[in-house]
Image (cartoon, rainbow, N blue to C red; front, side, top):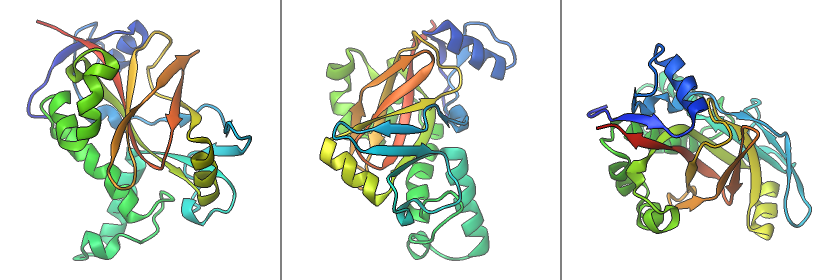
Length: 238
């Protein structure tokens, strides 16, 4: 990280969780987006579209999402996409990303899909501010952030990075209904935590989506397969 921002997270529960990770610091903590590797989990194993299709929601199982005939959404944390592509790189020394793009990996995603999230992670960890990060990686989301959220992107910091991948039948169901709600767990998030989600599709198009927290569960609106970055509201210390 080129520059660290001292911040206080809006949710006291989130502050406590992050402070524990950082060695017991109290309210003033530093911005460490590298902690977006923290594991996200699935809180509800199914979700139902407005048109009545029930979709199974899971973390990686070893099966390839695109080869699954049943309607499935897989939630994959960045720690797993990083490890999966590292294994492919080690087995194919000298190969280019283009040559490896279509290879199925241990994450259940292709090398290219893993790479999309991994590239985002690299930019998150080297960014100097959230505004700079969004300008570089999510210009469409950046353009609407102030009007949609009501404040600068620098009021938020990344806390989770993961991929949401829908099987072909799940993609068809989501397209028919427009979106679907997926319930996930994000370390430290509790009721009262103010969250914003930036999503990307497989073509790199970015957009903001609604996020709500109920009983500590994060409900995200999913429109398409691709990376998701959850950001929490912070307060910059003088």
